[in-house]
Image (cartoon, rainbow, N blue to C red; front, side, top):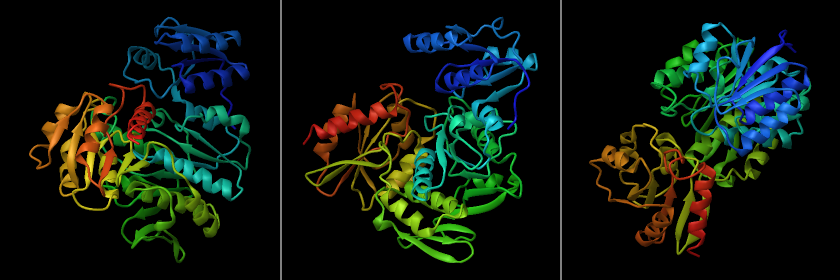
Length: 452
């Protein structure tokens, strides 16, 4: 356990990460300075709790004067490091780390399984946690999934497996963070409101491997285009998952998932799993491979995967109405996830696709080849609808604009027939019309269920 031998620590951001970090540091006697540019009732409530414990807090701004005496900064993942206060701290050569870096330094266990990727992180992290629970192994599931690593430190001892979802934002500010097992599920266009280009995004993601050595393990998507560009830089022992036969690792073939390490083992038949979609097959391969490397019995892995219910808003079957299957895939916030969702549904020209939301600058033209012969109609909504339509042109698929999800669901029902899928896979963030993807998915489900 690495204690931080300084007294004054600043925190930028008072979300979940900043609040938990503040509590952790105050309980250990540090002088804590927290700055948060937003100002609302929830933030004031958090600020008052931490003030009562001894923190100094400023709300509604980031002022350089407030942080002039700090010796270390813990930056929340939602804070873009290009802002003025960060430049001020860099010029003063004040170290800036992320919450996962802080937690790593204090963690009694270094048995860390860290999962990142553009899509599938939360499902994979949750599934690994489910498998470890079925195997009765001591573990905590935390990170970008909702409950912070730093907030779980009290529940971690030397034998605890830490199953950690990590985002590119969290990886930007690591120094010594070193997972025993790292997993990169996929990389595709995302967060272009944060990163100038794909190279910047890729550079943030690949930091998950930065401190690993030959004694550590890297679980990698063999089929991923961008991962192949960085594979030579990875120093850990490499294991792969793929939709082609691969060694060493896990692969999918003819409806079955195989583990192919010391010998080839048929793990499970995907007819027996409850979660749908090509992306979820990848998530299962990665989760199973990691669990097997951690010496969990294959029968336990198989039963755990087969009993896993999945998570809401990810290829979630809402209802079948007059033979039409309505699917809520609101967590789809980029074209890569839309592609996987389309490829998951069997049949030809039997998908009514609902697309659109807040424009994050993605290239949607890449979807044309997956839409062709699979999608019969596209319903567009939200801020990005006009640009999506332009980028999909010329595509011989009818498209129509709607104003909201109520209109989208109503129109989708009218133009669908028995055997069709209505796939709500927006490929955009939700913030133009909704608080988050969960609220968006709940509204979609409500509108679908109103048809019953």
